[in-house]
Length: 294
Image (tube, rainbow, N blue to C red; front, side):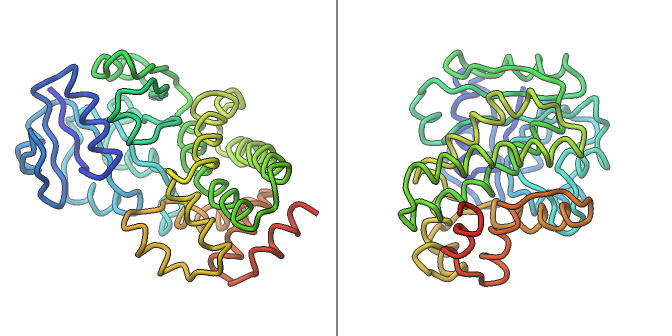
């Protein structure tokens, strides 16, 4: 049996998919929701398999309070811990043996998953047998690939949100498709350059979890991070943008973490740096994009 912890858009979409294969699956979240199979956190933890889909910046505190060391855990959250500057797999490995951890990522809008539309995802684990175990929980319309490159899947899943913000800014400034194509191509190279420092494999960035997720997230208003960029280009204040969204846009927080890590490790990350300058230093978006593209 499997439980989903996190009832937001992504957690509930994955629960919807899993429920087609495992009708007895359970779901819980911090806020009580009117969902079939919704239970308390304590009840959900009676199951052997657990899928975590909560905000990246909340993971550390969650793991301090909830004992998962004997569970098999699939992490659907994406991001980097801002305080510790650690990837989510590093945070989880402080509490759970790596052989019991897997991470799911890829180009996927929750709305389309709930409509049973074809979707490809990657489950990465240092224990490939565990990745294969989790694969069995998903219905046929979800094409699941398995891999051992946890670092690559983690970096790609976090970094693409930052590039999506930049892409939204580019669109909002009406700089054109040529500029956006250049931005995304350079963004993919930047993701790979950053990931290499942390042991990621280049092939991961050319596949579903890398290029696939980037191209989706950075090209649609269904993406929260893309919408953040659109609104920054219009001159809106970040707090107002986030309030309007009503959901977490992980790229806002990931931008700061990537900037700090790039400075610390002397990594060339021009796009992430300009997004950081726009969000946290108030740089004019048009000047930032021109500094990148002209």
